[in-house]
Image (cartoon, rainbow, N blue to C red; front, side):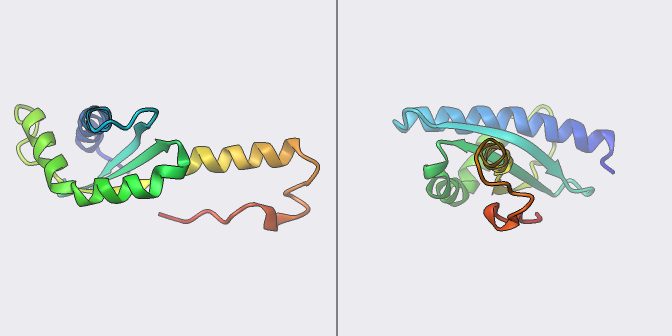
Length: 130
């Protein structure tokens, strides 16, 4: 169960992180790429933050998440500059791909098609627990 402080810090990080990532994508000439931060969860000691990213189009998500992970210190510095009046210390950032929209889309396509995923469970990929 998250405390109110964790929820507030997660909200601040989510809003600013989304702005940082989207601005970096447009400045680097990536037209047609949409990066959104779907969820941020902060540990109880406020030292780590897990950011779940949804990247459109899905075909470029793996290369973009690697680039984001490699530029983690720069992103943390930019986040610290933005939140210096709100947070005393910025938590370490971990980035993960949020594939829930893709998973929902696969279920909808399967239900609309001729194949039934209930009768043939091998049609859908198993979800990874994170």
